[in-house]
Each structure stands twice: as C-alpha cells, then as structure tokens.
Length: 113
Length: 111
Image (cartoon, rainbow over all chains, first blue to last red):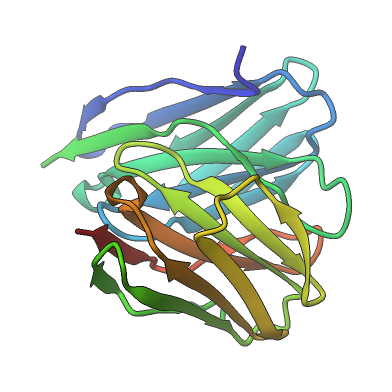
C-alpha cells in the first residue's frame, strides 16, 4: 500500500462546477498537508497549506483535513478553465528540520468552457 | 516574495558532458531540496540540504552531485548522465516546518 493515495482522474467538469479532489494516507504521523497545482511542464505551485485537522479557505479554494479518517480534500468553487492542471496533494511528518514531502500521484483536472 | 529561481529552464546534454543546474532563493529558508519529476508522475526527492549541510540523499547515483555554496544557492552538478535521466528537475525551499516552495524547474534532455 502506498503511503499516499490520490484519485487518479482524469476529471472533466464544466466551467462553474464545484470540484472535489481527495487523498487518503496511511501514516498517522503526518501533520502537515499541502495542495499544489502544476501546469504542464511547469513547477508545482503551492495552493494551500494546513496543519493538523480542520478547514482552511482561500478565495475559491477550501482545504479540509480529517486526521481521524486519514483523508484530505481540496474543493474548488466556481471552477474556471484556468484551473485546468494537475493537482498534487503532499504531506509530511516533519521528522526534523526539513520538509520531506510525500506526494500523491496527482489528479489531472480539465475545466471545459 | 515566494520565488525560487532555477536556471537554465531547458538543457540538452550529451552523455559525456558535464553541466550544472542552479537554484536560488531569497526567502531566508534554511532547507533546500532537489526533486526529479518524470512525465505524469509526482516529484521524487533526490537531496535535502539543511543549514547548508546535506541531510538526505535518497540513494541517488553518483553522476548527480549536489552542492550548497551558501544558504541562498543550491547547485546540482551532472556528469555522464544516461538518457533515462531526462526529466524535469525541481528545486524547492522551506523554512523548517513550513510549506515548501518550488521553482519552475529545468527540463533536462540527455542525448
């Protein structure tokens, strides 16, 4: 079993839809959770960063962490064609002074105009 | 400013060449990372520098040699690479337990 599992997609939605992206994980030591957006042939761009359980909202994006279920989600409201990208979840237990991220495999999202 | 700058953006090299990838950040982060990413795969960690000392080497072949000249700079020296080493090489930085920021990557092609 992989440490982090992510719904592979691809996911195709119409413009304006609410998108739900999800990851599950097996390591209960993970405490720090990130969502990155990666456009084709570019570096990952940090979208959301969450510590421990709870919700965090930033504009059209909401990140949820449920540590009891080992499940994290990213919601995108009013999705736009510019949101079309690969979304990567990442997490870390921060066993030290550095951030060794464990990534999900990524979900490819296409928002149709 | 949350920018991590990588140069060059693209690199084509022969299997006998020696080249270097460069990464720079001015966020005061004390941890810097090299990742390798193949097409349609997530980034894979290669090296981690913490306070300018190599703290993690994920069993990367010796044809990849990292260097951290100071707290803002990170280099990756390449020598005698193989075609299968062609990938997007990503640099990232973080301030200990905070979020990691990535550069735009160097797209490397080995011919």
